[in-house]
Length: 255
Image (cartoon, one colour):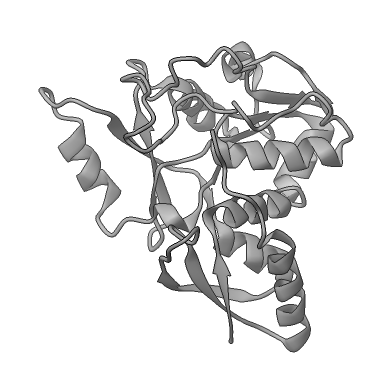
């Protein structure tokens, strides 16, 4: 086994690099519609995807999110959005390999069908059950509220890129029951069924290894980091080490 430290920013980049090669996504890029719903982790995915198809010139991760989690010193609205979000330019919608600039999931959701793919980030992660949940600030459940009817009704694939830093130990359904009752304030929580894709899935897929979460935490820029233990054949471990080194100096996401 080899052990590697992954910062949150490196984890986002690692997830993005893996999803570029994931066959449901490459198929949707070629033959259907691929929707990357705005979010900080998804910003890395959009950057990698658009670079791969040669259409990244007008894309920036800087404001590619709606709601965002910030420290108390940085104010935001009750719905979780920045007070000044004029730089938000929409989600990334790609139809048959062409980025449809300026569109959001709301513009295309009614046309999505089986074989199409939606990427939506998450705020809570149950690693054992491979289940995720999303903070809800919008009174109609926001973008996930728009996505779920076609995910369930038409078998549009929902992939959930989420870093293992967001892991929780309690059952997500139980947490949601506590947060969503009438009379409380603050965000609500929606557990969702979809394909969870963390740094663990990224390394397992890219490098043909087995990856385990073995420790976490740090200081001086390593806050939120995780230690991953990776096992596999020698050549797979060597490749995994090269992949991790390629993302290990990713700068933190700053606003």
